[in-house]
Length: 50
Length: 348
Image (tube, rainbow over all chains, first blue to last red):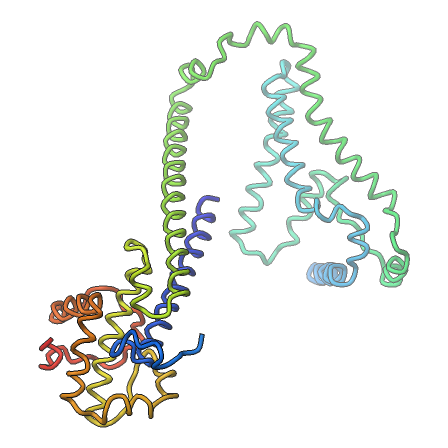
């Protein structure tokens, strides 16, 4: 029972980590294609969707 | 001959399960059906234990021997069958039928045309035979438990003299045999270990999950990596991810600039999908590969992005180690082996 409980909880945690890593990837790709790393804080430069 | 009989029986059962749900529901012990045998065995075991504990005469002892031996026999039988493989499944049926004939017989399915009729009628009444069987089974269970208890009630005064007076847990433990003591100690130890693991790991996991959830919210709400890195908890796993993502983005950006200068190609590894949609814009921004102007553009930006600069320096320092610090965001996507000895990358 305890094993099952932990297995489910750890699976949920893994899903969370996977979700946030996907979010980080998305942010990174957005930053890169937007050129934010080169020119940050230029609001009118390019408006990315979302 | 035997094979043919088995085939016929299996065929009948397969048909009954696939096409006669209405009848099975109407009889309504469907939910209890898997528990029929465990309950019977439990009652039998209880009867045996009670009669062994409370019975005074030889009859009760014999009855307890029998009642306790039957579940053991069933266990051994099924273990042996499992070891042999599940091919001869029908071999179990005779033994079980001998054990308790009244409840062991499976409910006879009706013929197809009768099933059709039963479906036409909204609620077919359960047949009297099955109701009788159920009640007789319940009565049997009650009887199995009640009979030794009644015997105990008859001989209760005599039993009181035999029972030890002190029945507190500690005295019971002290007066137990050493095997029993050993088992009890082992059980207590296992219990302590189990509860410790359960509590500690639950707390740990709950906290980690909460932190990760908050970090996920931050990452989803942030509009850039720098913003996410500013808002996130330092100890969340996502913080490591964000840092790795930032360093990864830095590397990719550098490589992209280099390769673009070299061959005018367009390489933006993680954000390639977005970059592919706007190639003209990037090229225009980048000023047709003018190396010096590129660097001039990049300098002040670096100072404004202090976080990234630090990260970058850290990366540069760690460049010579075989594994770079920080988890990689996506090991599969960063395809080309980066040239750690490139002079330009080492300069800043």
